[in-house]
Structures are given as C-alpha cells and as structure tokens.
Image (cartoon, rainbow, N blue to C red; front, side, top):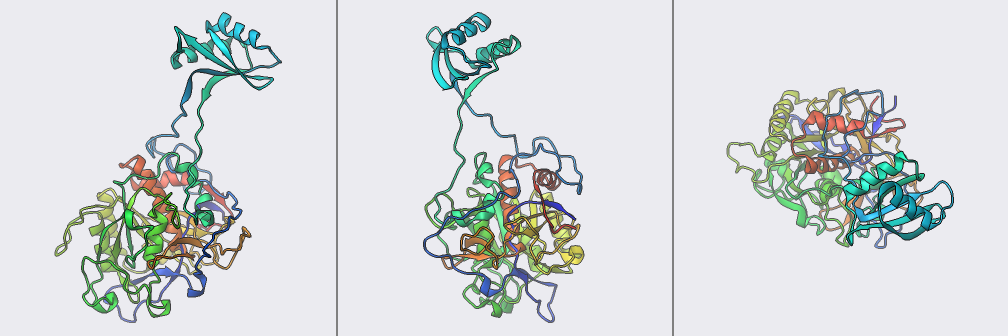
Length: 478
C-alpha cells in the first residue's frame, strides 16, 4: 500500500537489550560499522531527484493520499508564503498583439487615469510601465484599482505589479551538495520562510554529545540521565555532563558511534558558515539528554529525559532552564507502554511535540515502543528514490516517512553512498542510514513549524505534515 512520505529519515539497527534489565532496555537504531564512510575532503556535486514535497509553514493543502483523512487546522505554520514585494509604481503589461509604446501608455491613461513612462520591453508582447503622480511612484492601492479597471476593460492580455523575486537560500557549507536528503524535502523553499527561531529548542534524547564545531553555537547545556553506572560507563551515573563517553569505542562494544551527535547535526548544524554540513532547522537550538549508553538505555531513564526536557520538575535534578518545544527520540524497543504514555502526556501538556523512530527490523510497528504511542510522531524511512528502505519498520503506527538513506546505494551516481550525511562527535562528518536518521529530519521540520507558530499541537502538526507530503512508492505505512 502506498503512503504519504517525506524525505529526511535517520534509521539505524536496534541493538539487543541486556539480558536482565531493571526496566525495558532500548537502544539507538544502529547501522553497521561498514556503512559509515568518511566523506572525501573535496565534495563532488551530484544529481538529486525531487521526490517529495514538505513545506514547513504551508498547512493549507489537502491530504494527497487516502490514508489518515484529517482536517488541516487554519494558520498552522503561522502563515502562507509571504507575498513578494513590488517595485513602487511599476507595472508589467502583456499584450495580445504587438503594440508600440505610445499605444500602451495611451490606454493606461485613458482607461485607468495613469500617467506613465515606458520602461522597456521583455518581449514584443511584454512591456514595463513606470507610473508616477506628483513626481512620486503611484501607490500600491492606486495601482491595484487601475489594474482592476484595465482588466475589466480588457485593454491588455494582463496587467500586474512588477514583483521582486528573491533567490532561494543555498547554504555555503562545503558538504551541503551531498545532503540530498534536504533537497528532496524542498527545504530550500522552507528556508525562504524561516530557518528556525533561536527560542525554539529541540531535545535530543540519545547517546549524548561530542565535539564538532558545526554544532557548538547551537548547542545548549544538557544532562546525563543514565542511572545505571555500568550502562553510563562514565563512572558516576547521572550528572550534568551529557558527553558520549562511548563515542570512540567500536560499535560492537557499545550502542553508540556518535549516534546522538549525528542526529543533532541533522536538526541544527550551524549553516552558511563555510564549514561542514547544513542543519535542517539551522537557527534553532538543541541540547543533549543522554539516555543511551552501553547496551542501550532503560524506559525509566528515557521517561525521566522526556520530563526533564520539557522543563517539568524531576525530584533530585535541577530544572531545565531551556524547555524543549520538540523532542527527538531515535530509539526504540518493545514494552514500557504505560511508562511512555505517562511521559509523553507530560510533554504534550507542556506543549512539546515528540518525534520518534519506527525502527529498522523490516517488521510491523504494532509492538514497537515508543512508535506505537498515539501521542508521538513515528517516522519511517525512504531512500533517495522515494522508496521504502529495506530495513524500515512499517505499519499503521507510522505517521510519516522521511529520508533515512541507504549506504549501499548510489542512485544519483555521484560516487558517494546514499546515506544521510551529518556531524560526528570527533569533529568529522559521516554517512549513516536508518529510521534514526529519518527522525531528526521530521524533528527539524516540526521545529521550523514551531518557529512560525509556537502554539501548534500534536494533532495540528500531524495534520499539516500529512497534508503537505508527497505520495511515495512502497512506503513503510502499509
């Protein structure tokens, strides 16, 4: 069954939980080590197909698929695309036949009362007129009234103001050309509306932080909430240092591989700074809540992380001074239904949107937590072609899909793997694949929406996403 999909998916394999966890253990969706190549120093441009459309602040469209019929609330991203400015006093005039400039100016004056000079031709049938009154450009209101009179008189094929176009924002980050996953989402269009607001914060509940200059400016203080000392592997359990101490360790010995840093970079890497990669919502800020360590993490610690992230009180912990409006959880497992339900409800009450990964087992999401919690946005993964990846989980619990990548493919023929390229905690940039990678694309998109309208609810965001996405082939909702 085909389903609505968006690009931006981060999916990695789900690590096995410890044999006897104190509570249900979860792990980041982890890709195999061989699928994380470091990009060459000099990036090569590639060809990327436009597969799907997601416009961050456009919430007026109708659903493009049969599934999930929902009314799209009004004003969901704040507003529609702002109308472009016009050049004061200028008109563009299209004619049915070739007319000399004197005839054009004569009709403007006799029918609309405009006194104009001819501003040149774009073609034999396209003229520019520059209209003034008492030496000043004619007002926009007067021009609109004149256009209405000219239209009613059928004096010309068309008459309209001379609008000012703006270039779509293209970051100067040297690796942006390799981030096909943003272009398939049409994020360059979203960025002409907003690149995010600095007072919108995204919490990354994951393996913790590292060091990468592309994230420093957009990263707020976080916390380590792993209560088990062995799982934390930093010697002291919970503390105010969310550093991913397991980052450099080979993946098979832990459940990390800078997973949280890769997720954070997709959301909020500093953009247009002539360094590394771009972030999906480059002006928002992130903080790390370390809940995954050696072997994964417990549902109790993850629930604690959700509560703390949105600024709610957690006994024994300092209150978060930068409450999150969006929570990204690229993790999952089975069990913990009531624990998650309680924490997600607290997040919703605080106005936060929770975005989670569907998982990478090519299995039904019916029993996958927290994906099957009705209060979250659950994200599946598609590849560069817009097809469901071979690893993504599927099912009616999947809200939407985004680019998760496929590191074993090169469908655009640019010589690079079709994985998701983002930041690592050792200052490098790597390709990964997985629903873990798809999820932060959607979290970034939600952050852009929240930047336009902070009052958006979970239901409103879901309706807006479903109404503004493309119809993918073989998508994971089935």
